Length: 448
Image (cartoon, rainbow, N blue to C red; front, side, top):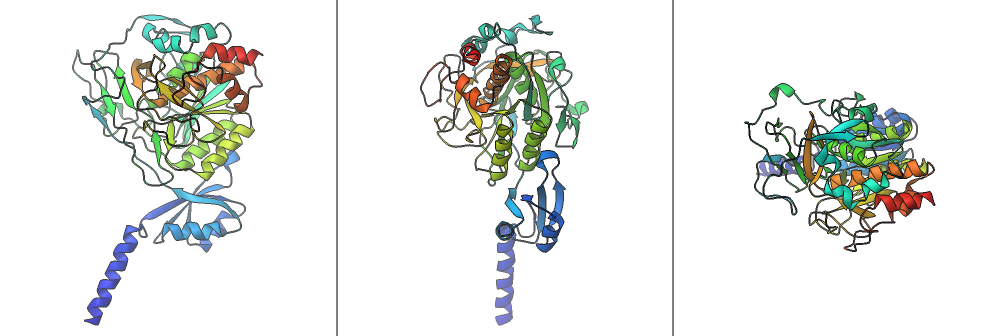
């Protein structure tokens, strides 16, 4: 009887340890001074990878058969460890094709995007992209009489389609942190041979769930309220279950290019087409952008909990004069999400084309610096397509493009000055910071 009791206690303990993740591999993002291998040996950890460049000193360590809370507690007491936090990947919710429910502001029926091409700076682009209502809201054409952008805008995202005729002359080499190779190509892990083609006369609506999957402080969510209403009668659509984030980076890049057509865009690919990323990839991308001379960083994603390592990376970027922009998130709440909530970052909320806050957009003056259109915005999509999209993901790049315009007016503009200039916005209340982005007024302010 006693032996059976001891056995049951041991089994209960094993179950409890398993529930705590003691037998799974857990990973930690650690900043260390000195020999990381010695620290790893001392605590029974394995060095998975070490970040390079200005991110040197940051390492990803792993443990197996240990309780994560205990590992983090031990590391925090190590003199040579400056910071330690859990590193956990997150998977985006899947896209559900032809879902009948749309975000507030999305049309009940598909609106076709005109394929008529017109001259737009160094390329030809769809007239519906160049002359869309959002450009009137932000006073873009008038601003282009003062500035058309300069410098390098890095986008930390899913990569960009380098073959898109509207974007290709504006792209500069980036890096793919998913596969650890150059470029930052959107199609890097997409097998085009498996791409199904919808029947003729079909224009699909792909709707991404907005419910975040959270599993700790390092949960990362791409802010993609609606993955796109596409423009072609015969439209190639990727398997939504396998590639839920495909096209996100190309759509973000298209909006930066629309506002700042003479800026260079540096794609830093940290999210795979499946929508997954890690904090270490994002942190490495930030340091990479600064090391490679980026002037602006766009981040169309959010975390539900703070990350000290991410904040330190963005503080470093700000100290080098880099202007950092992030989306405020799509929960429709007055909550804090990061990186938008960091003081070194310009947080951007979404509005419709009538300057009314989008119901899906987060808000609050402690989170939001200003707002920009984020409903039914038309932008580029891989393989020569265009898309109509919803979400704060697509408001942030309009402001990142605005930062490039400010640099065109005054090359000395840094993050703090950009906030002052961008605050010359259209006051609309609604807990949206300075109000609606006004590119012309911001550029005028930068001239003074």
